[in-house]
Length: 117
Image (tube, helix red, strand yellow):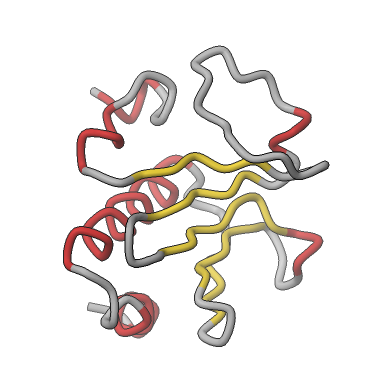
C-alpha cells in the first residue's frame, strides 16, 4: 500500500465497515475512470477530493463519508444532464449521489460502461 492509500484508509477508520467499503469502492471507480485526477485528502473536512489541480476551484468531485453512508458530490452537478435520476440535493452548483449499500454502486449511470466490463 502507498502513503496515499494509507492516508485515505486511516481517514475512514472511525466509520462503520460498510461505509469504509463504499468509500474505497468509489475511490477505485474514480481512480480508474479519471486516472489523471489528483487525490486530495482533507482530514479536517473529512472529505476526499479529486481534481486537476491542488485547490477547491480545480475539484471534479468529492467523497464524503458519514455514519449512514457515503455521498459522491459532483462539482457543478446542477448543470449536468441526469438521465438516470441519480443526482440529489438543492444546491445552486453541486449535486450528489448517495450510497448506503453496496448494490447502490451497481445502479445504472454510476459507472461508465467501460468500467462495468
